[in-house]
Amino acid sequence: MREKLFRDPVHDLIVLDLDEPADALLFRLIDTPEFQRLRRIRQIGMAYMAFHGGEHSRFSHSMGVMHIARRLLDRLDRDRRLDPLLRVAVQCAALLHDVGHGPFSHVIEKFFQDHHEVWTGHIVLTDTTEIHAVLADFDPRLPQLVSDVIAGEAKPAWPSLLVSSQLDADRFDYLLRDSRMTGVKYGVFDLERLIMLLRVSEADDRIVVARKGLLPVEKYLQSRYQMYRQVYFHKTVTSAEAMLMALLQRAADLAGESGEVPCVESASPFGRILAGRQDLSVSDYLQLDDSVVLGALNAWTRSGDGVLRDLSLRLLNRRLFKSWEVANFEEQDLEIRLRIESAEKIVSDAGLDPRYYLLYSKSADTPYRPYNPRSDRAGGTIWIESEGDSSVLMDVKDASPTIKAFTESPYAIWRTFFPAESGGQRLRQAIQGAFSD
Image (tube, rainbow, N blue to C red):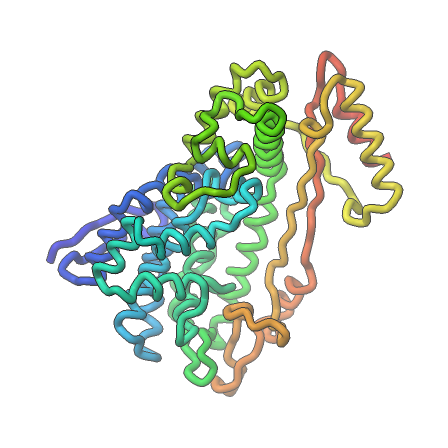
């Protein structure tokens, strides 16, 4: 047996048998330039600013998702045999599901105003990519089938749910991996027990949880809730993300005024994005990774523009803005408008431009979204067998008061970010007072 062994901090060993055609295909995909690019994209964006171990990449996460999806297929394929090519497509989709991510993962995505899923589809389906060539060489139907699985459009539907649902290999891996790498314990849950207790419901074309799986599902959803509240929405993380967005906006504003992006080649993919051009090809997009943005930040520390220089130095040297939670921000009533104007005046009087030095973010999540009969989104519900009758399925929230409480607990955290001081003037207390008095 010709084996390729990958040491993984979460799953220990990920093994591919190169004598097996499907495993050989996965190894070829891992070796493509488009997939190797994921080594240069951080899995959790700016979280390393708060959790110094959180430097892991989309590459390692994608390897983990592939590994878990293969284990799930081995478990569930006994319940309902899959077409061999669809089984291969699910494994490829799990590996490639994040190949369309841009620099710093979700952070830059907001600035690009384009979802990584769209670019993933382009990369898989465009015949100029090596990923497409490898897939098509295995079977000409495979690129479209992989795209369909990622988009949730494959038939039958249940294999796609292994890649994208509220109980999928993607979430299983990122919770365990991000928890391990950041050094927190919030994301730990019993993956082994969950895998053993999943079933395929042939009548409904769904993945369901055996009744004994209720407690593991509760722990899994609690882990997800805690990771969002304590890690992904951490105040330091969101401050760094808001500052990076403001920095990119400043570069874009300067490009709009002069027609050139400071210290960035205007014809480069990054320069064209900052200039507001949306004509990127797949080849252009694949040139973007964390190093491109960090290179620009380094160049901007020598920029003649004070805002660009200052924000770049702050981010590179971790001199981040302070944060303050703003209550009732979403009401947008006269009171909050007056508070914003008061805070803007404080920043302006200190000689700073509020557009770049008084920032806002909204961190929102619903820990579990229950069944919605008006939605046709596959995987939008976690189904569990009814007690005493495994043929009857129910929304997991109806079997658990804990999960029911999650459905009733959507939350949104509004924060404002600002420098603690400027030119010897202390701003922190004054701005906090403007929002809290």
